[in-house]
Every structure is written in C-alpha cells, then in structure tokens.
Amino acid sequence: MGIKSGVPANKQVLGEFVRNARSRVTPQMAGLSHGQRRRTPGLRREEVAQLCDISVTWYTWIEQGRDVSVSSAVWSRLADVLHMTKAERAYLFELAEVTDPDHGKAQHGSLPLSLQACVNNCAGPAYILDRCWNILFFNQALDTVFNHWPSRQQAPNLLRFIFKNPDAPTVVVNWEQRARRSVAEFRADIGAHLDEQDISQIIEELLASSELFQHWWSRQAVVEREGGIREFMHPQKGYLEFEQITFRLATHLDYKLVMLLVRPD
Image (tube, rainbow, N blue to C red):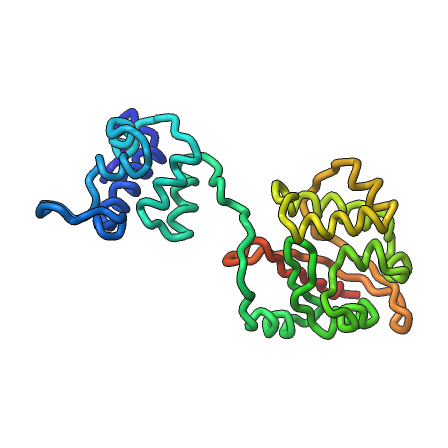
C-alpha cells in the first residue's frame, strides 16, 4: 500500500499496524463474549475503543493515520488490549513518537547461564553488570585484574569495591576521577527507579559509609557509561591497560556486558 497524500508516513504505518493487530485479537482473548457471528476476524473498533477507554472516533482516527494527540497511558492500554509482544509494543511507541511508561522497568527473573559461558569465552576481562552494579557473572581474567576480589565476595558489587574497599585507590589508576564518574553513570542507570528497594538500599549504604560518595551524589551529575581507556595497577603484574566496551543486553535491558580489551603494544 502506498503512502496517502498529506498523511505522515509514520502515522499511516502506525494506523495499518494497529489495524492489523486488532484483526488478530479474538473476543475471547479480550475477555468479551463471542456474541453473534462476525463477518471479519478480530475485535471491532468500538470494542477496542471501549477497552482502551477512548471514543470510537478517536480510535478510528488512529487507524486512519490522522495526527492525533494520544497520551502514553492510552498507547500502553492499546498495546495491552491488542496483546502485543515486547517487540510489537516497542514498535508501536516508536511509530507513535511517545515514551513507553513501562520502558526501563526492572526485568525480574534469572539470567540464562549461557551468559556465563559468553563471559568465559571473552579473551580479556569481562563481566555482566545489573542496574545496581552487582557483578552477576565474571571471568577469570577479570578476577585476576581485581586481585581475586570478585571471587572472594558472595555478591560482588562494583560500587562497594570503588567506595568501600581500601585497595580500590591503589588498584584503579586515576581512582578519584573514575569514582566521581561512576557516581554520575550510576545515577543515569537508575533513572526514575530510586524508590525501588534494592536501589535505595545500596544508595543508603554508600551514603552512610563514604563521604566521597555522599559528596558526589549530592552534585546530581548524570552521564552515560563511556568506553575508553581503563588502567589498573596489579600487585604482581604491575600496570595494566585496557579499552572498555559496554553492550546492553537486548533481552534484558537492565543488564550490561562490560568487556576490557587488551590494548596492542
């Protein structure tokens, strides 16, 4: 189907996408009685409008690709009513050009053990970090760089190492600069989730135990986690230099794979 004259391309695609999704949802899936025989599969427009708590006219305009102002809450209800998958929901909000209110919510459940194998197969130091900066998986190379600190911890946390381990200023070259930036990166990671228990607990713990964390936390600085050079001083191996690369896991957005690549001589 071509693009209609005068209709923004993304709005027309959005309308077609929603209409197609509606055709796949049966009354039973939506919790409605089947009623009389239907000429076409899927829900009727008025049924979707009722379930989304909007007018039929407003919903019709969405399917027609009109440039209407719809709140993120309505788009969220529409995604739920139409039983959209995670990928479909993300596509819906991208076409609608609004932010999903559920975006970034903590994704509970265990990470697949295959991620440990992924980390183990990295040639250099590597680890999986969650939003609280707990190190969930790490390889032997990382354990060596940190002088076996991760393997000695029941639940290693990178922030605890930086601000509570007396060896950190020696192990991490340019420790003060890295520590200050880590606070700003952590703030960026947690976003609007300060009231979540696991996050509030680590913040309160560090505020109570580290004056430097307290000082830098009060600065309200926010930066994205960056790549670049990472330098360490190992008690036996001496000076170590790596290039850090961070990947966010596509299926678990709260988790990151951090790799330290050995720099060529």
